Amino acid sequence: MTRVYLDYNATALLRSEARTAMIAAMEICGNPSSVHGEGRAAKALVERARARVATAFGADGADVVFTSGSTEGASLACSGRNLQGSLVEHDAVRAWIDDDLAVSEDGSVSVADARNTALQLANSETGILQDLPQGLAVTDATQAFGKLPIAFNWMGATMALISAHKLGGPKGIGAVVLKRGTELAAQIKGGGQEMGRRSGTENVIGIAGFGAAAEAASRDLSDGVWERVEALRDLLEQTLEAGADDTIFIGKSVPRLPNTSCFATPGWKGETQVMQMDLAGFAISAGSACSSGKVKPSAVLTAMGYDEITAQSSIRVSLGPETRESDVLRFADAWLAKQKIYRARVA
Image 1 (cartoon, rainbow, N blue to C red):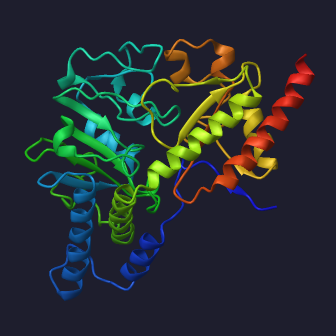
Image 2 (image 1 turned 180 degrees about the vertical axis):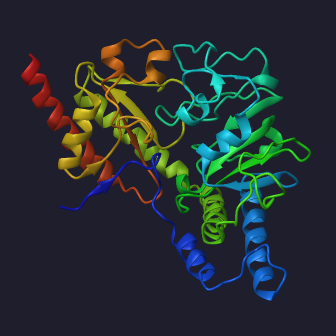
């Protein structure tokens, strides 16, 4: 059985460009903080990757501070700031905010004080996009980077969180992007690397892969790859709707990521669907990868006003550049067959 991977929002497949860059980086033995030739070679590689990430994110002239990923980035950007936010934020951000901002039925968040608010650009479960107000303190752009054209210098946020493995880079490397001159207190102290904002010897191999993946992702956007992915997502939803009139498609009427479909058949638990589809050869999710396996209603859907039964019944299918039409149609056939069995059982 050939498996089909449809969980790109959890992690994307490693790009060949990133793999090549990482293998090449393994040949460089120097520490970027060393002043000898080997150290300067490692430093040059890090700075070249930093420039690639900045260019792809539309952040020329901003600071890119490498971290181990968006979870560490959220700690670095949000700690000690008394930020407001909402229940639709990723758990990594919610750990640092007061999640008391109102969320509408369509998933949009009402922001009162942008300078003291954290607001994601795209939701990992539903794909729903937010309109970012000017002066926003922090935005989690982890899911949007690489899937949407982004210009950090124009989005109005002071800081943004990004991660390599969501766009085809390696796991374990991310960054906080911030307007130059923004104060940022180091959470990991020691040698003063990353402009004094994040100590510790840089993950040279991961950084090289991040830079290459960001550059390749930018080319995909220019080449119309995500328009093709969006067409496949729409085909999937049309096919499912035709055979499952009791299924709710979350956020379908508002702007979403081009690759994300979140839907629920009330009563048919999401984790059950994930296991059934896994056995059938398909990798999907019941929500954010960081919260999958926790048997509880989706906090995102609950915040949007869905009842507990529906919030426990959602799954997420997220496509990527490698997804083919045959993959989508195979999944639709398999899922509809399982849903037919579920309907017969509860009838």
